[in-house]
Amino acid sequence: MNFSIETSGLSKRYGSVRAVDGIDLQVPEGSVFGFLGPNGSGKTTTLRMLLGLIRPNRGRVRVNGADLGSNRYAALGKVGAIVEQPALYPTLTGRQTLRMHATLIGRGRDEVEEILALVGLTHAANRKSKGYSLGMRQRLAIGRALLGKPQLLILDEPTNGLDPSGIAEVRELIKSLPERTGTTVLLSSHLLSEVEQMADTCALINKGKLLFQGPLEELKASAGAFLIAEVDDPTRAAEVFTNSGLEPNIRGSFVEARCDWDKKGRAALLAALVGAGIEVSYFELKQPQLENVFLELTKPGGEG
Ligand SMILES: Nc1ncnc2c1ncn2[C@@H]1O[C@H](COP(=O)(O)OP(=O)(O)OP(=O)(O)O)[C@@H](O)[C@H]1O
Image (tube, rainbow, N blue to C red):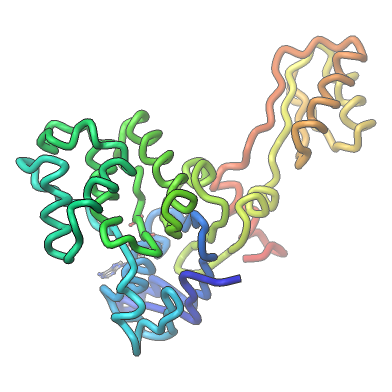
């Protein structure tokens, strides 16, 4: 497998604070990679080191196959990023914004039109960005970062502060990028629920240390999803759960159990409950929250 980003032992201290502490990150080419961690865990510091904005105290970074320390131009030549709040000129139109940046980096007007279409702003290209919704502004900022056709796009909390429709727009755009443009996307977030809607692979960082790296499904499985049913006869329902191989707990009218089954398995359990004459008023697979994942990974005997 080829990696867009590879770090080894990457570390950064601020005084006595180990902001990033020996991170070995591997971001597969062509992935949408979620970099997860609570506030203050070291995400931004890591992203800034990947972009050469701050120097690590220790460790190495390879970006797009080139060593950042010794071959900065090759490493960062095909990288787009938004790590600070994207500053847009409010009085420029979307098209003018992109054209100005294209001129600065030596790209043509055709590419500006391509990007406008890619980020879904062709229809609004002649409107000033101050009249854009937050989601449109973020898409314009992403469009600007995509000028120059980067192989890698790095986004720090790209949906933070957006309203629900803005979040949905930006999410769809990010998800579509590897297939439409071949760009690998690394995005940071403190929300597992957000990352799971965009990313296929992820890393989890806490207090500067990497707790997990790999397929998102694996991370979720390590915390365990919960199947919850509300029923008229919890005792009998619990028997059905047990007979199906689960280990249920009863809480009032709810029966719940850890469960990593796919849709088919869950449908079979529901059918078994109904078949046993049990009235089911609620049936849901509750996905783990980031907090639970942390608890699971940091508990004694866990991976952390
Ligand atoms: N310039 C700095 N000087 C001193 N300490 C810093 C500096 N930048 C970050 N830190 C500290 O390093 C740690 C990691 O911060 P960082 O901003 O990387 O976390 P983060 O995961 O991006 O959090 P957030 O989502 O809140 O930005 C924190 O304890 C923070 O206070």
